[in-house]
Image 1 (spheres, one colour):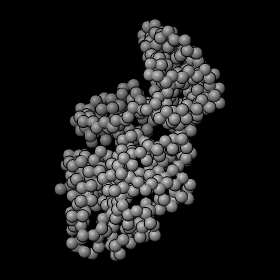
Image 2 (cartoon, chains in turn yellow, orange):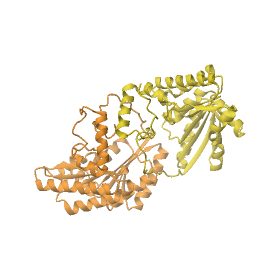
Image 3 (cartoon, one colour):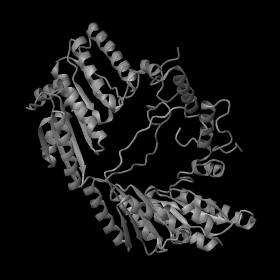
Image 4 (cartoon, chains in turn brown, orange):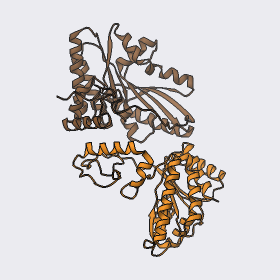
Length: 268
Length: 268
């Protein structure tokens, strides 16, 4: 059922595995001189086996957007927001390792929070992202991309994407990444009634997906295929695999009543 | 492909995710007054969120068998073999927590090993299990069961199974469990040419599967369905689900060339 987006059946019963609330939690925001340094730090944290609980990247424009929207005064540069879970000793150990790694990549201006209220304030910049985007360019709509690449290619993919935005888009496209998973979003702040901006958005999205696929990634990390990414499915998996998906869809749902028209592109 | 046992296709290419060798490793053997205490300790370790790397249960007869086969002198009582991975501080923390938990359930006679050679010696009892079984009753064959139940029911399932063995089997059936996963095996040491022992083995297996299913478990935790457990598949999933599995098999493998005759029971 994972990834089938309701096209194969309806979930009628769930068994939930619960996880304990961690004994100790610490959160941090770290600033970086450029986006590659921030991405490389995230990669190095994961590749060092540090069991990071949350690892979110906001680029300079995104930090600028939340500063304006939420009245914050964070450095408007590429930043990582991190959270560590574990025992007190375990968290201290993770924190020390991450400080070393981030510093090595030029990271600094660490801001730490341990108490729940302080952590909520620190995470406010991340939580206000969506509405900060809409306010960043009044009247815009945010078309959010969602590629995911192998972690080892993440810094390349983000860096090339930032260059693509600077060269080809006349409107802002701030970046937020769930970078420990190799997943990041561009919020393309287009005016929905402007055909030229819609054309540029579609072309940018296609280039971004092609870039991610070429790096061994996927057109969607968490938002799904739905209607908007049907055209990328064959590009990613090839026509034989999509034909097999269609056969499986028929096996599960011979009457075609499960979320019809979604995920699988029309044949031909 | 997981769990399809080669009936849906052939794997032609694999991407392997590698994990770093842990900085620090410690291993332990703990003895318990009875099998429930050992199982309850394993459950409590997992439910406490301790990231135990290995957690194996050997019952009294199994410890007796490896003592004889491998010339060891371990207490012939229910025992847990444990391994901890992490940083040095992290492992020490896990070890302290597990000692507290095990002691609370009456565990004792801890034997610890940190150096690689000492750990290998400690784990020898576990690694020699299979050949120790064959030697335990000369001429026997070991029919190995493989049920898995939700962790919260593991102690009940093992305790009832030990009682079933004592009441109904005239030959030994030592138990080894990968208990952090709710999975355990009975090595039924029957004489393969004795029809009465074969009948008792089949009946015991059916009772064990029924017990596991009644507790929300499965007829196979890791060994698979193959030929030997086809008769349990409908019992576990119901006729509609097995019919759907057959439809999916046909969708993937219309010519019926992928591991034919395995896993799915014949219709009717």
